[in-house]
Image (cartoon, helix red, strand yellow):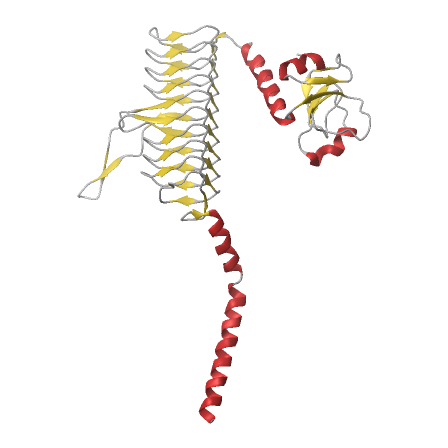
Length: 350
């Protein structure tokens, strides 16, 4: 697909400077782009490449001053990074819209309902009474258990498994290998030291505009629903346990995990490899640093924590500063002890 600067500017509400008929067919990083490619400049660290790049079209900020003339056509926008991201989304959407139809071999139960313009790749399994919305894309190896619901414009990448009774909303992306609706980790200890499995009869509900990375696992509720609210973004290798609630627009980085029945507020940010215990709540806008272990509820919105067990971020930095001074403090204490001994000895001689 080839697009002109004028067409791209229309898509991202930008203004063209230079040749509006300049065309591109692919994307490139500004320091590596070749003729026929589109690049963008958002980070001032890369400004030097603006004058050496071979890109045919460059998206830049309205505020960007030019120190010398450029060969490339420019498209000015308020925020180059956001505009470029929006353009990539539109490009990806156009590419996936071309996919439609049902490939073989695949299995679709006679009681399943499929919307318009659905793509079902080979080796997809669609169970009984599954409901699939319009423009849904199911790539190879996707499994949809009985009574699953998938909303419009949702994309399930290869190998995604959705267990029975789970509900996915609209405009969701789930990347390869993720499992939604597997049993929660529920085992009751017995008098003889064994563990008896507690049946997990709930489901998982994923609301609209959620993205879930590769090889993430979201467990079904024991009773009720594990809930991922609209706008949440989960990275690769995430673990969300049974009956957890992930709030609107909350983001979780790779390898972080949330234990059962914990509730995360909206706009929470969780760093990589952070762990959160069960049956607590995390206030809106909280920030949990990477590798932190959260063992108690965070009740004040906007709180930032770090460490294991996690505590106030600013206080943690002060503690780290003090700990770095401990060798010097130890030396001074020993010197003071030596001085005290000398003073006591002198006093004894008087």
